[in-house]
Image (cartoon, rainbow, N blue to C red; front, side):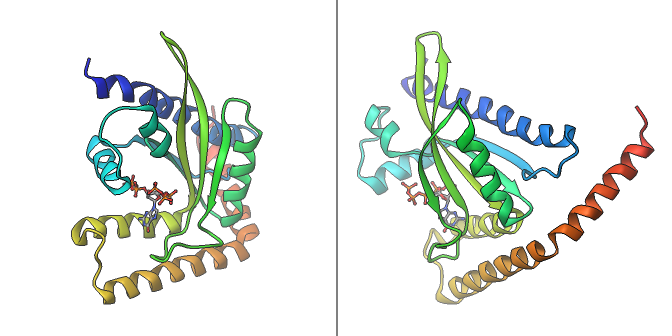
Amino acid sequence: MGQWERFLGPYKQAVDELKVKLKGMRSQFGINNTNSPIEFVTGRVKPLASIYDKTLEKGLPFEPSEQLAHEIQDIAGLRIMCQFIDDIFTVVDLIRQRKDMTIIEERDYISHSKSSGYRSHHVIVQYPVETIHGTKIVLAEIQIRTLAMNFWASIEHSLNYKYKGDFPEEIKNRLQRAAEAAFQLDEEMSQIRSEIHEAQAYFTELKEGDNPK
Ligand code: 0O2
């Protein structure tokens, strides 16, 4: 087995396990007939090409090492999408209460958006993975954002590929304006949140009535 494969193994396991656990939180809300603060969850291990780019950016040697594991905190990356801004903080509290992971750092890009317009709440957790060689504690980055923030970030991310981070001024301005519009949408939706929840509960009941078990 290659040294990278060996190094990334525990990260892959962490992503797989965390996806199950975070999706489990979503289902538990369903069972209790409570609106889930989690809409959907995704996860990935950072591709080697992106790890390579990050080592260049940070001036690190491109080799599996403790230093790399310490400096690149999103080798294991999870993303939790929420309907409403308040849900983000509910999810962070749920993560904070868990005994199987420990938050060691938080970045609030919601109150303080990045200059690109990017908004999201990031938490870095320490997560123990059980391996045949014993327990290995890995870092994982969990990005928690609304659907609107996610829409913006994925569009901006694809444009980044085209422009390699060097956006023409006009596109940069448009993206910043789009980020603000997405944020306004989130704020509007928050204000009619109780109406939306009532309607969603009504549709769930209707659907369950259609499919008697
Ligand atoms: P990818 O392809 O998503 O993996 P770092 O550079 O990670 O050491 P930083 O910037 O303080 O330090 O980390 P931060 O801010 O916690 O988060 C970095 C990750 O957040 C990025 O990972 C993106 O996923 C996301 N992100 C941050 N800023 C932006 C932005 O302006 N636009 C978009 N679309 N995403 C952003 P990677 O490795 O850059 O990319």
